[in-house]
Length: 85
Length: 415
Image 1 (tube, rainbow over the protein chains, first blue to last red):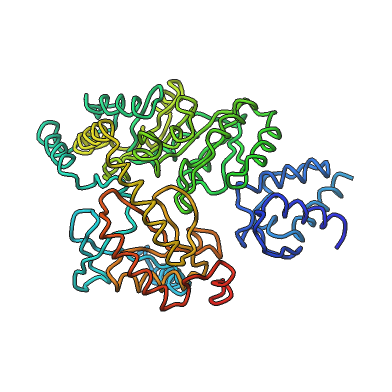
Image 2: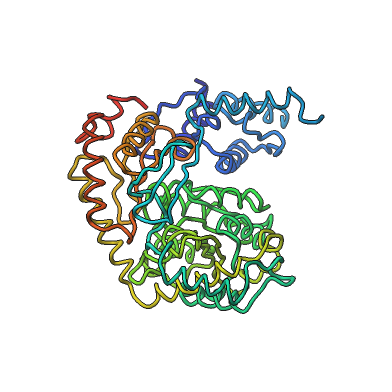
């Protein structure tokens, strides 16, 4: 797994899993549809990505589908980083 | 015809999908007033069955209390059946003002505004007091009505892990760039029965310049030494900026709710909260009954003391029988079963034994957290609970879950 996905996965685990939550998360685990991240909590995820990677993700692109797995999140971050470059 | 076959087919398929997922909800018809002993018709058309009710929010046993019924009857005679108006046109009677003043005194706040329900209070309050410069930081297990209310508000949303004060503090620090911060929590969480750490939340809010919102629907009337609510239990009366609560649970159980708190915030709701502005006034008969309820709970702590005893006794019985229950002190006592089908099967068998409880599973509770939520009432006598535990033991033994911990139940039944 590349550095970007590792960083996102680590953030998701720290931010959204409770201490006694023994679910195993991978880069393809459904986050929104899997009930791990709710739509309100997506805000903190979006803010984390925007601050860490110095990008701006328009609300129209920050959809539950686009944020539904670490793979998908990494793709959207990569797209906006490239657009910025 | 607009309701064409393809439209009907679509909804029938949707409903079939809900049935196949085991999530289809069916109402049970109760042929008696609410109480510890009720007669239920279930499934529809079946003969009536006498059962002990262990799933009502009738915490103080006031839903059918003769003095409350009599006060409601007098209200019906003296103030009529309906007002045919929203509050601000011609729907406010003297008794609405009286009830709001009594609630303010009871809750220890500055002002109160009645709503048709606490669902409506929660739906309207956030939009009325916050704007897009602000942030709402909610505990992740708050009630669905709060979630809906937050969706209607333009302020930014964020969440903190359930009752995790370190995480809340991180969020409060992170959002210092916002105009106002509002920490949002239930007083007693409806599915787990645990209490919010309101003393710590208030301390953090003071430290990081935030307001505090508490939905005390599962606490008003019985939590705290004199039943004022979770803020009394935690020693922070007067320090909660917004309290929403219901008259539909311990406080008579009929309907109606309120926003209570800082004078200006309540007034903002009177000016801007859409469920207040655009729905009918609380009916005079309900207001009259609720006034008597507040007199009863203000005069004596007898009923909340009995509820406390019942709660402690029931928790002891379940623990001794070997059930895995969520620890705590509230009269919401969840019996953890983890597996959704197991929760439904156990609830069905308990009904067969004369005990009315309901299984809860995703999406009402998180996946893998299925349970039977039992709820105590001051209307229960010891014999109700003794009969209840006998049935729980019999059904628990049938499924081989007595004495098993979480891991062992999951190993036996899966998630």
